[in-house]
Length: 528
Image (spheres, rainbow, N blue to C red):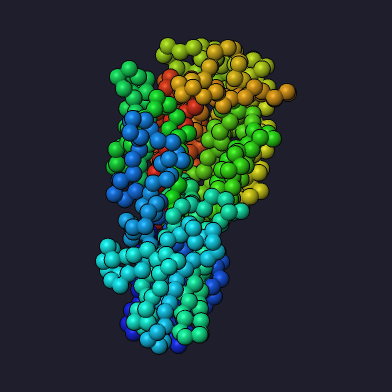
């Protein structure tokens, strides 16, 4: 979470005859108390105009515990109870959005109040006052009992606002607040107001620079995961990332992508839609959809993933930086080009080579079968036609929402298999005592998984792409499937680095993207 530096225009402030409270309504980083640039429509918040404040829910001084007194990890709800805004002290003043009142001519008996409305906002924001804005320890919470003397009103008040919590449900609170400045002088009561809204919680996109690559730690008893981390770290270096891998170490769960979705709140940013999967009639949890929708800027777009055994969108689609007006394009799994590769292998007289070239000790469907055998397998052909039908439908959904020229779409050769095709292929699950999230296939439907390690399921790091090593057919020492993958990503100007995830993740139903995560830059302007 990063704050936009604010500057206060102090000299000389306008002296008002009526209450006048201002915020950075025009979003230029300055609270203007000399001119009128922050006065126009200040009481009305819109997507293009209106002050923004941050949820101050970090832990700047690392005072919040991660475990209870018995050393057991705290639940998500328990972790959320402690933050820099959970008390009455301003621990992170850099995340305070400034408010100023103009000096006002009042009698010696006049008093002033500053408060937030409506009630839902009052309970979820904090307003602070300081007589010395340069000293962070001088900030004091403004509660409903606080009044300001005529001397302070005559100087003008230096105030700030932050959020105690995130906006989670629009029916409770959508992040909007109106701050009222009320002055009582004898029997006369005058007031002014300024509208603000909490900065939305935003997820990252692939145009944002990767700062840290994340995965799950392994100990000496987990050589397969250790090898994955070794190759992932080598790919990190090739990609130019200076920060070391950040490794989760509180679980034996290898799926770092599933632990969390990195997100941030900032008074800067620009981002697109959130892409999520649904399983036919089953949608993601309502609480999650409500939370994402109330942020107001990244309305979830649901794609059909019920045809996949795991059911994640990263199994067939991805977004890449691209030289067009949008700055990005869609890359999508493509069974047609993958079958073209196999057909060429057969046509060139190499149909007897292994369709999957992995040589390790593994019990994986299709391992050892030749290209000829896979092309002659009617179930395999039918399964991939079924996959392509859903992929095509999802691509049309994306293109109906994104003004992307279809010619810019990048097709990544990918093949699928039925979950039970040939036996084996059971998916690993952590030993957390929870039931499997998997479903049985619906009537007349399949549940599919990647046949080769699926290159679509990789990590975008600028113009570098970290891909699962596909282990396609080897012809004259060349992996022809990998060559097709490299050709596809080259259309986006991307260099491909491979990581062997066959034993660590592929056999368990995922790939490199599933076993990793990224922390990306956050300083982008979101209202432009």
